[in-house]
Amino acid sequence: MLTATLIAKPGALDPELVHSLRNAWGGGDAVWLSPDEAAEFPLMVRPGNLPQVWESLQAEGVDLCVQPTGHRRKKLLIADMDSTMIGQECIDELADAAGVGPQVAEITARAMNGELDFEGALIERVGLLAGLDASVIDTVLAERITDAPGGAALVATMKAAGAHALLVSGGFTAFAAPVAERLGFDAAQANDLLVEGGKLTGEVRRPILGHAAKVEALDRTVARLGLSTAGVLAVGDGANDLGMLGRAGMGVAVHAKPAVQAQCELRINHGDLTALLFLQGYARSDFTHPPEPEDYAV
Image 1 (tube, one colour):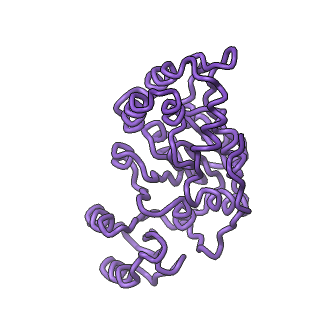
Image 2: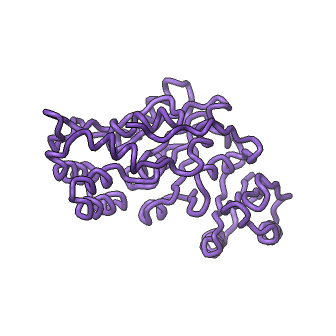
């Protein structure tokens, strides 16, 4: 048995579209997870025209995901940070403060789309930050870093249902640690920027944590918690996330780079991070909403 889930921005999912697709595919009764926002229905077989329907719905601002029905509620959330759980790429924000923003942003975009080796691209970008006052990290965190919509509810709802939440980033601990604490993650891993005399040295502590480290973190946490990879929800947007997205029972590319979307079956381009709750069969009425946290403080 399969489940087809349709998700749009609040108020933008036309009930007639849902019922028409259900009828065309011979699906079961539609269940509304959130009125005019998210609905699902069961299917006996995977539709042969799924890629074409997905494309047409994207043009209408609707995400469509088809996946096995059983065991959708996951017990481990493993999430990328930059441009996934937060709205920015931290290294790009630091580079902008250092006056090398455009140069670094271009390298970041190519690396996240899989055009450049992640480790080499990170070394090159961090090298351009040499001499930057380390206090700028706190300023960027306080003034430029924003949580991605729906992230806090995603973490809180899964944890309320007994899941463990791990933030894994190819970025930097100076950002990942406060982001993880603010959003309610149980743990975080990232790279360490080296500082001497209050200035960034332009170096990253070795070994650099990238693609392989995210997969290793998934496997290590699964083993420690006594789970299987089928019980994992992984979310990311860049090429260095592909390993963990493919390893997880539910790997979702959210607002991802084109090269990443091309390799992922589950893609969210219009909904926010609460779409990952809809994919697990949670209704909006099931969501846990944590108290609104204060802004990131210096």
